[in-house]
Length: 191
Length: 270
Image 1 (cartoon, each protein chain N blue to C red):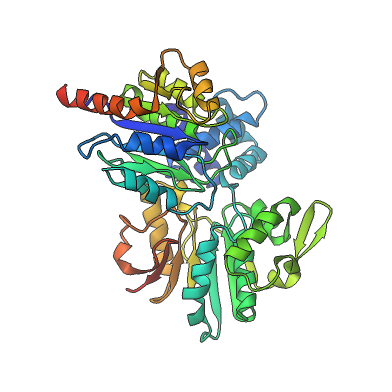
Image 2 (cartoon, chains in turn cyan, orange):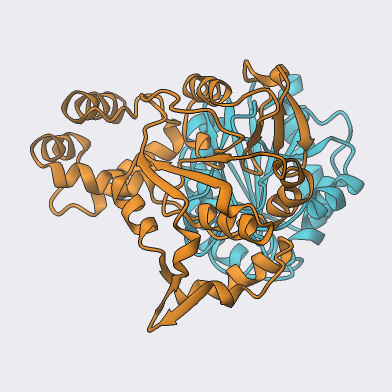
């Protein structure tokens, strides 16, 4: 299999961007997707509910040590960091990393560590610089680095930091990201 | 290189000090080892760190701090305490004596939250709260009842959302940058060092809270701790886990019924 996991990070303005990406994924989309959206620690399941409404695949908040299974959309629960650990996820309640919990960098770095060239990282809209280092590590490991274009991002700071930190990352408008992921997913079906 | 060095470090710790981190979840553990190394001057490799750990108990103590110190809060996840108050506490009124175990309590914020709730439900006098952790230094801190004043705004907010019946500031006295909790909240708490990795069950409890502790363990060790908890509960005893934790895929999944699925409250049924 060419790819094994898609990881997506979003902050301010993320709900709209995530909806845009997820609504473009068909029910046949096979790659597992892990999402970190910055939010408060006592957040309830509203985000999961809102994303599920737009998405043909099952969206669920990750439980500790849950296996990474094709076709599922995983969301970092409020109050936890989300990490990849071999073939499953691990949660942690350690302090914020780079002012963020859940931390996009932590998800991206651990995904790069375990999936290497088989991971696709996507940095969406947001303030701050979370995700930039993580995306650079994904790129360094031979994975695919995608960034929401500053033309469509509600907050440009995070995409700008990610562009700064990477060399060959592909900038895509919001409406192009979903179809691009679908294309990568089909590529691996073919070969 | 690190895939060779890390197991050696963990082996050294267990042989020299008896602390066994070999079945901790690797993602977090690796991060913690690196954080601990950053705090030591002149340590650039895990091997160098191992050398220092072996020869200096203080270095080991600092490692324990890095591994066990975690973000905690009073009435953390207010919905948990709300559900506890509404769905579990009423049955406790009939008991002559109430025993609750907070396994992995760190500095005790959640233990005091329980004490406050039990006080408001007029159950504190007959309660014994067992607060245990692997790290003695954290227990000492918890026993002192002193917390940072800057956290009180969040805690007050949590307390209210958790269904608190009084005014949160009635439970503490401010002094400089700290607050000290009122003494009666601590009088029924038993603080004790206990290692979930290597120690066994030490009593039977009406409730065990083990929240966001097992996320740092691998599946094998999680199963061991679930066994320990199962052995520490009578039928009808209640288990509270963290929001992101689950009984699913553990050997004890079928031994509990759900009291509240969203906040991860379970009751032992067999």
